[in-house]
Image (cartoon, rainbow, N blue to C red; front, side):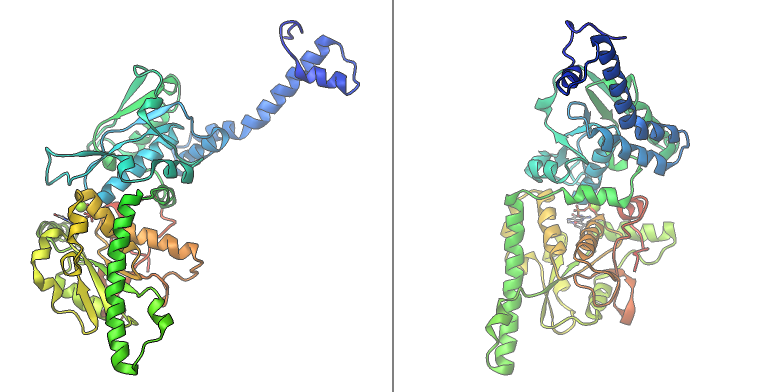
Length: 452
Ligand SMILES: Nc1nc2c(ncn2[C@@H]2O[C@H](COP(=O)(O)OP(=O)(O)OP(=O)(O)O)[C@@H](O)[C@H]2O)c(=O)[nH]1
Ligand SMILES: [Mg+2]
């Protein structure tokens, strides 16, 4: 149906007249409508075909659908997803946060900036200490790096605080991956889709089902940049480690050839970081895990860690070995004894940086240690730790982005190893993340399948 010119401004017709065509007003309006209809159909066609394929309950198809929805329309700026406070250790929190982001993306919504927890959940259950996301990670930076993929919003952006729909996440054996997906699919459609805010109620997002490939998680992690205050603390610790390494080398250099060349001293001195996961609660848990899963390569004693790190081929000595350990172990001097000659161990206390860490709650301490480990020239961790696993994921991305074509090669720059798995020459096994894995399960719950 065409509308009278007096009722509406038909810019198309005006342009046609301008170009010298003389069409009567009614024909012109009808033509304009046909053109608009054709343009709309062409624009929407790929999305409609996406809807067609959703009939198959195939994770990949659903996933592709979420991509096509986003690429057509972008994340909707004024439709929100709200999630519960995120709990547990830093790296479990990062996974939970990424899961909340990817859920928002699937629903084509903006994620309301969640609260993280500053303390360890299992230690201080009554003192969860909520801490806003932007006290740890840069909010604006996250949005600019993740632009077009995921967006975060503040609660002040909500227009109608009562226009909220609750989405109850299920739990237990009956709550399968398929049921979870069905629910998400449902909440992406009318009438649910019309609500301004969808509020997820249920347990920690870390426990939600995982529907996304490792690459999607990695993309979210790439957008997480620490606030300056925390990254500066990590800079201070890394500088201290390199300074000590330089002193050690210059002593050796001067006793060997008289003077060490100026340029050699200006190079950043390499260091090894070892995440020693040997605290009592973990050792008890990992023994049980080994019995239950009938896998023997989960727990490593401190002696085994020292021996395997000592057998890494090609480490130049003297070399500082930074030990990332639980604070309770700092009283246990035995972790500093028994290292191979030339590998000089330091933890926070011996390094003189306890003060830097002690100013901050657990979450931030862990974030500083994470940075120190991920920037190390060599990293050795436990493949049954989320902390270690996410460091290796970041290092793998770094190797790939720098053009490392054979990341599992013995001479790779930025190598990572898992000390709980025996590798070459009785050393730890080289470790990199399989970036084409279809989900994050292996990383989030631990695995002895480490790609190399
Ligand atoms: N279990 C335990 N770990 C601690 C403690 N203090 C520091 N840690 C170390 O912190 C690491 C965990 O760091 P987080 O960043 O909190 O990581 P997470 O998300 O809990 O991941 P996991 O490594 O799987 O525990 C552990 O692997 C420990 O080495 C402690 O009191 N208990
Ligand atoms: Mg933990």
